[in-house]
Amino acid sequence: VGLSGPPGAGKSTFIECLGKMLTERKHKVSVLAVDPSSSTSGGSLLGDKTRMTELSRDMNAYIRPSPTRGTLGGVTRTTNEAILLCEGGGYDVVLVETVGVGQSEFAVADMVDMFILLLPPAGGDELQGIKRGIIEMADLVAINKADGDLVVPARRIQAEYISAMKLLRKRSKVWRPKV
Image 1: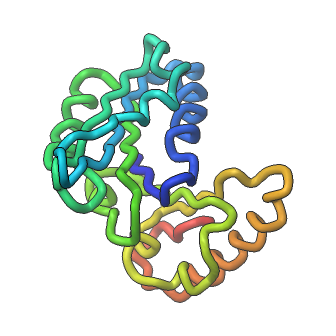
Image 2: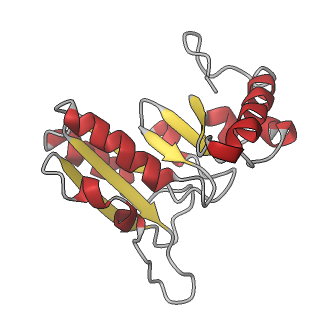
């Protein structure tokens, strides 16, 4: 499963909750988290793992942060091979968290069975939804952080994306993307 979304959408927190739910159901979960590399220093914070403290202590989970090292598309040059290694190592669920910075960060969509776009309730309007790129690659659009005062904006953005998704060309004859 590939996951992407803008900074602050809650990708790492979402993955931790999903990962814990899966390990509680006896799945072995691997998380490949991709962080951006500095164009100046070449360094990377690799901080996604710090948002997954419970999952990182789970014996049925493996978390591997990796820097992009200049690779575009939201993943690393070796993400596809890392997915295969995790599957070969007995992990039955592999979650790939992309850098997730924009509308062209969807290379992971061709590497996974399902591509989820995670959006915060204030993630734009219907115009954002009809822009080509990451939106048309998503198999599922999940509106995250949809609680408290954000319930109403989350419902509004959900309705706008449902409407916008109707305008996009279908990628599959059997699956219609959900919001």
